[in-house]
Length: 301
Image (tube, rainbow, N blue to C red; front, top):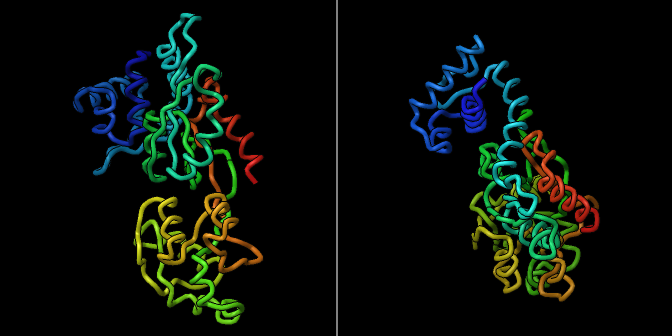
């Protein structure tokens, strides 16, 4: 079986589209279509179901992808690193949410890079969950950190850690609410406070309200800024209440720059996952980074 045809097939399987696969491979769409048809003729079975928006693999297509992809990735690994034993640095491509990656993952991986590291350089991309998983599936990343477990067998996810969310505000807002009012009135006591969030849909505040108060927030966002570190900065200056990961606001809480408005018995949690393409943990750099992050997560608390 022609390896070029298999490479095209795996790329289409990961991309979910002949058009996207053609762009990734640097080929024309007709060339990709022709190669897939050639492979289907050789196997005597259809590998994809053509749809208006892309393609869906058949059962045979899924089976072939899951068998072939790890071996093709290993060949790419050999091609990238070469056969020269003197070549020690391999570039690891990591993707994840900006705040968690910057504050947690990168410091944990720092010891594995550079002159005193253990054999790889690091390139980092930030993105949403969908962008990150699509990029990983298409081969743009080697390792991804996400807050959602991917479906299907193409990607393999391992729980990394749980993130506790805290409802915080500057001290002046806490004093305005007063002690005990939040316990008595619940979310109603917070309706007059402005809200700082990462998106107009208020994802962190809405998740907290649903988990703790069994309701939806009544207020809309006063300040919307797409980075949790900036949300913390705005909360410190008194722009409004915010829901933040505890690891991100722990120092500000200790310094009294913000105050935890509520300490529920069961705080809302969000789970992070380490995700790889199935089979790629056989590659030493990916396995090393994967193991190192899991070990570091055990100490984050």
